[in-house]
Length: 105
Image 1 (tube, rainbow, N blue to C red):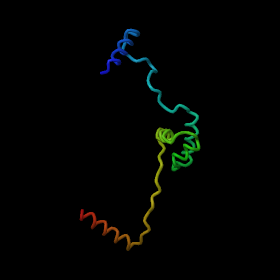
Image 2: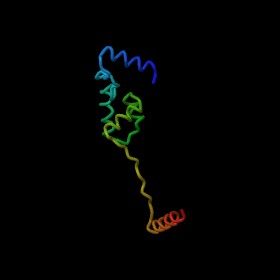
Image 3: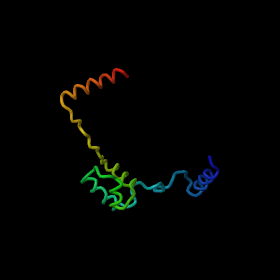
Image 4: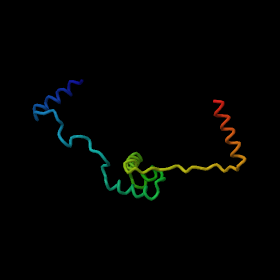
């Protein structure tokens, strides 16, 4: 353990007669500017599939901050899934080929 750490603990103990940290001395949680957070959330509520970088540029904050805000609000984006356009015959061949591949490995 570093010598300065021990010295700091001892000096704080001499001053306060306790080794407990002062309340509120830790790192603050959350975004610094609540107004920016309030601006970015309605954009995602309207369309949650927007790119975070685009929203960050429009609102005026970093993409990582927008990502954090989106995660705290439990908003999730979803990728559009394409359903294969298959006829019944193609569906049968696809299943048999998949079964063959699965059984080979």
